[in-house]
Image 1 (tube, rainbow, N blue to C red):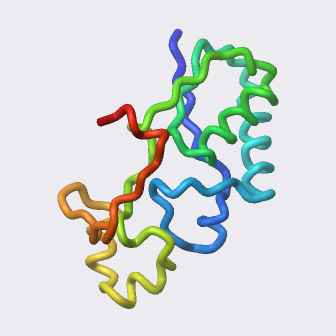
Image 2: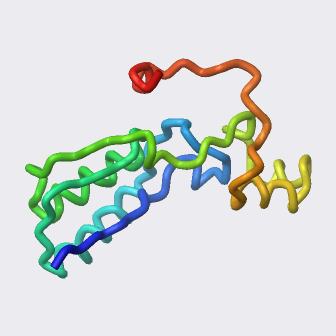
Length: 137
C-alpha cells in the first residue's frame, strides 16, 4: 500500500517573531529543530520505509526533511526540491509583523491575501534576485 506522509517545517525564526516569510529563507529555531525530531520519532514508530522525499527550496523545510531522514535512519533517500512546495509569496508583506499588517490593511483584507486564491498582497517595490530560482525563467 502506498503511504503519503506530509509534515510542515518546525518553528522558524519568522514564526517565532510573528512576521511574514513566504519565500524569505529563514532558519529553524532550536524549538523548530526539536519539533522536527519529535515528528521523526512519530514517523519512526510507524515503521514506514520511504522511497523519496519532496520538499520546498527553503532551508526551513530542507532542514526539517534532513532531520527527519537522519532520525528515521533513511538519510540515503533522494530528496527532490521544488519551488512549487514553497510557501505562498507574500510580496511587500515579507518581514512585516502580522499584527501590524492587520492594523494597516484591515483584518478582512489580510485574510483574503492569506487564505484566498484570487487576491495577492502588494508587490515588492523591487524584484529580488535569488540564484536558486534562475533556471525557472
